[in-house]
Image (cartoon, rainbow, N blue to C red; front, side):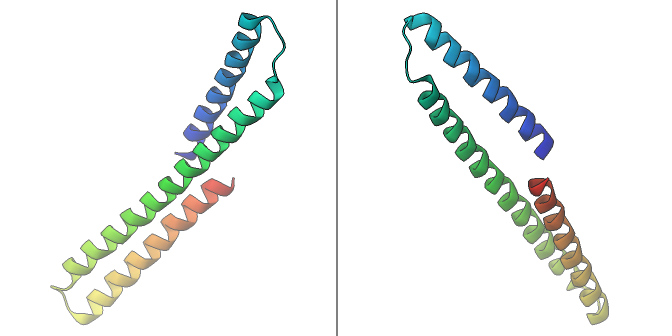
Length: 106
């Protein structure tokens, strides 16, 4: 879930801070720690955004496969039950997509 992903990102940020301190203490000289930190932070942000996009796409793929399965199952029924089942699947897919988008935004 998104809250778990954010917890992981927070832990990675802390580890980046520990790594920076280790580098600073090990070498004994002042490096461009701000530049290194900015680069590490940028990489972490890019990784997070890529993972978030993959998560959202995975949710869309699940909705699409569920809709296809429901459409195949409803082909055995009458036209009105098929239309009702398809409409229900579309609304369910929209709700899942909306929920995932909301989790990303918040």
